[in-house]
Image (cartoon, rainbow over all chains, first blue to last red; front, side, top):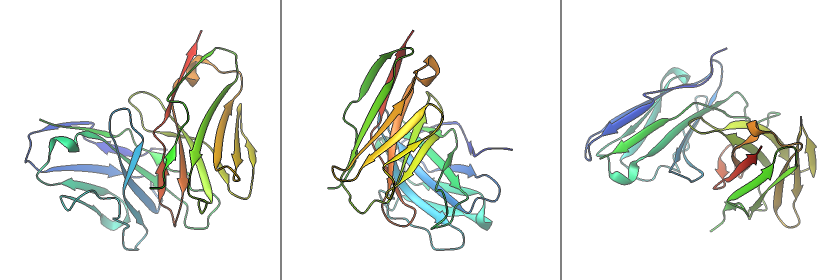
Length: 117
Length: 111
């Protein structure tokens, strides 16, 4: 079946502009994660959605970052007034497991490479 | 602060040899760990996981070892192949379903 998809694959924007990044998780997966990966670095947790629960936003680096998940499926990560330090690959992952389940395997999308000029 | 980190940023091995990638973690409350493989231009791919009530788990050509005493995790790859060349990340689950990733180790397999 289809995996996690993200769009766009690449985004170049000017400093100060807003951007929206989209994630389509695997159908039926209740958990959705956003991560940020800077060049040569590990993954930085941004936000986590689980079912209808309030999202865990503790990883968002500033109030310029926000995310929504509509209908428990598609998610959009919005960055307002982009800065050059926002340049990174933004990865989305989904998981079917609930807390306490047998596995927490996350299926990752290919990412969106954001470049802020 | 607490972190997940790796001992070696780059590891080069000869094709056919065994590879060992190490990871140190500092949060003793972490109860679940995952190893991921990330090839260039792709998202991370699940390799193997282990719960904190285990000290060893084996998959196909891969073994994960967990030493809770020294907070150390390792990934062993048997008979390393060129297709194993990638960046490998360990990740720990600390609370609920939030995961923290290490900075990664790049594995180069020489033919």
